[in-house]
Image (tube, rainbow, N blue to C red):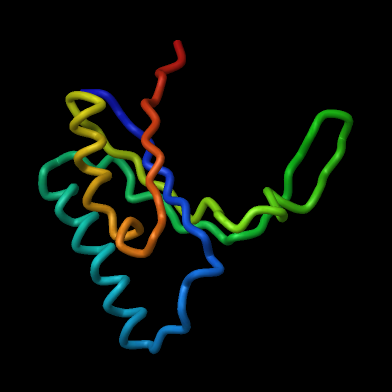
Amino acid sequence: MKEYLLLYRMDMTIIPARTEEQAAQTMQLWMDWIGSIAAKGQLVSRGSRLEPSGRVVRSGDVVTNGPYTDIKEVLGGYSLVKAASYDEALELAGGCPVLQMGGSVEVREQVVMQ
């Protein structure tokens, strides 16, 4: 099996104000989805949620605010899964709750460095 990185992206400006109960329901959707991948033995790392802002380091010791302050869509988190094929990895990504919220999942095959 190969390993695939799932990158979760979403336009943070479209997230409506949510009650604590709604936030808990959303979190449960994520936990159920990740749990289903783990139950199949395909979860390598559940990954982490990421803060929407950060810093970008460029050559010449240049550090700027970022990563992309001029766009709305942000990288919100990631997970690492294993799958027999790209198609299977795409199928796993297709169940991600971020899709229900207007977001997207970028699927990238991990290249093992030797």
